Length: 418
Image (tube, rainbow, N blue to C red):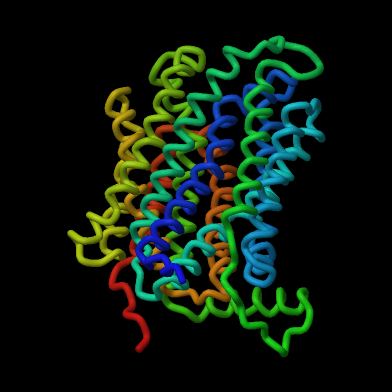
């Protein structure tokens, strides 16, 4: 009889698949990031309308996060992840072919549904499979490498997306497919590949069915309810949700305010377009570097909560520094924000998984995503008005302050219950 594979080899296989699936999940997003607004502008939409369409994505994600997280905990990670990838492909195709606000809004609605479906199951699968192979195995390395993979995939995708438009054989204008549609066609194909790999690689651990929950919908309701009660009663999870909400305000604030800020520094939108695309790529690579540094920083500070606290406080300072009047200093602060937040990301994930059980893991991750998306909606609406009254530089201080205050939830991290 052949010998069973060594646990170390099995752990490496789980980790490699998790990292590869994470990269492939975010690569299509990176491909379309540089051209999404440009495509909608080419379709004749003005910026206020585009803002409303983008809000459809966040609203759909917010509303569906918890039910879809509970669904993944009940029916398994594999079917939910595969469905998410296929819905993402449908979203990309809708945006590629669509004309008019309603059709493009439908594309964003599908994108929000896909985001809600896949916001927690892949990471939950990785944690469950790792613990199935070795209950005492550390999650930090896998979560850190996945953070690196996500950021590198976004950076690489952003560069590829711009190149696809330049090389596209499609016309620059027209009622059908145009050059700006090309990245969305490629993103759809990548999402289909992602779905196929999920079906091949992801296997849900064996579960013990609860006899008192005979129906899927009843089980789903019970799982969602228990996740809400856990978040309300568990001191660590309450703190993580507060930190995540603050991070959502910071990220959405920077994404909204940085483009006009650098346009003002560099002499207008046209002058800043190329430089800002390079800066965004550098930011994603900086986030990857931060994720790679997370295990080292945790060892140096002797606790993941202290390392995450240091990273988030540093990111808050960097976010405020983006308001500096010198373009180089503002650009360094922009990249520094992503590096420091990248350090905190995998460590916050580690703290989350330490507090959540297997049967509630995807639900809890969906709660985190809800906190992120909820503050993003409020932030983008409020900061747009504030920046119009004052300036993008002044408005940047608000999300910086929110992030610094949110970091305080990591002070004196509660000890695990004995």
